[in-house]
Image 1 (cartoon, rainbow, N blue to C red):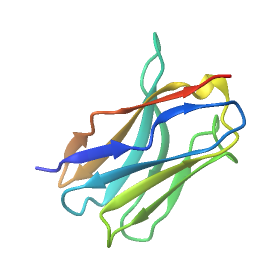
Image 2 (cartoon, one colour; image 1 turned 135 degrees about the vertical axis):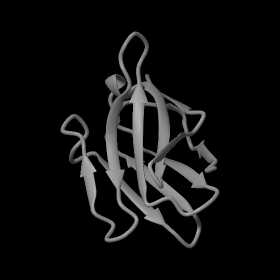
Image 3 (spheres, helix red, strand yellow; image 1 turned 90 degrees about the vertical axis):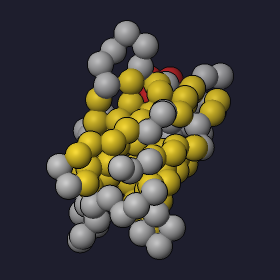
Image 4 (tube, rainbow, N blue to C red; image 1 turned 180 degrees about the horizontal axis):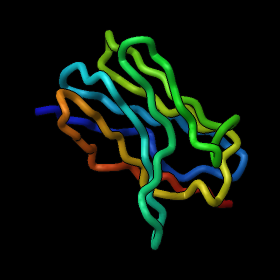
Length: 113
């Protein structure tokens, strides 16, 4: 069983930045961030492996968002820059370990002036 706890969400003005954190209870090789806006399906934002640290970023946020991890702290991060109102959503951390999938509870990000 893997527990994931997200933090770092909040209200930010357009053009601002936020860094989301997701702490995992045990090492989880494949980590990713998803988001779900009201009335929309959950979508993949970014993912990172635990071995070589390779990353994938969705086209919609490429150049603005980045994902990283610190395995010593059991934490994966989502750095979000140049935020836009359309980035408003609940952001979820997802972990995959031994063919099992785990989700965090989500953290709200609201981009508004």
